[in-house]
Picture 1 (cartoon, rainbow, N blue to C red):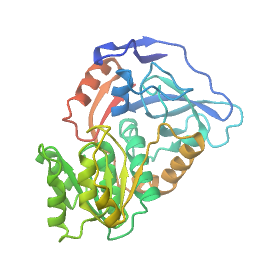
Picture 2 (spheres, rainbow, N blue to C red):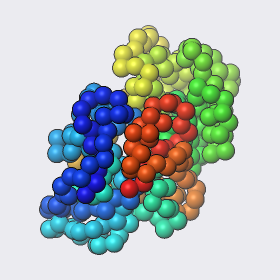
Picture 3 (cartoon, one colour):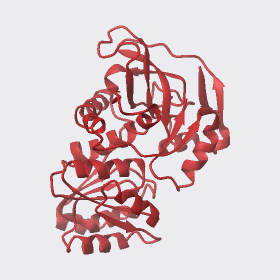
Picture 4 (cartoon, helix red, strand yellow):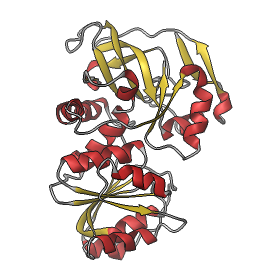
Length: 328
């Protein structure tokens, strides 16, 4: 099969499309013919040698989410049959023509989604749903602040917040991203310059000084202090990403005074049982919303597999709105 291969740690130029061995489905696994796979920041870090794939996944083939059809079923598979359209998150190896996946970490693709649209769903919507609904326990009328609202996870969170009856607020580095997010349900947008600390002032102004009950922090670094300052008493802060830095100085007194909950989360390194639980919750609660077009994927740009280098460069440009998808 053909696959994008990381030949050595480095920039986008270290990626090459090569012919490699096709995997074989084991017990409870299905072999997927991948038709599309979306890029994530973790793929860039893996390429640079800073975020290795979990044990059992290809170390040199990036790709954390797939959309494709079942090509073969291993022993013990009961959920799927040949030809079924499925999508899901994987630990790596998604930028290839074939991949083997545990059957319970997949969900059925709604009939109204194309391969490229479907590929833009799993990481964004499973991550957002797990953080917002499962972990933060969002309730109707609550206010949700979403950092990096123009990202795939950010845009999914905006839509899921609206679907839950909550009010999403969000920030981005450009007015264009904020304005485009409004079309997906963003209630209040904040353009962030070089001072993330200004975010809290905008939030307090927009909420009449009340703050927000939930913060989805996709950035980390200096944004974490802004998350704490913007939170309402008893607010829940879910730290999802560290694009802005892996270290932060936080005001412990404010956390104590507001009685805040600060929780970190990651999907890729979770045990199989937890990945299955997150996928089953997504299949039960989000896939029906996709089918009814209550929520929808946002695709920034589609590249063929042979242009994987250009796709990585495009994601690194930080100009994207939504997902960068690889057609395979």
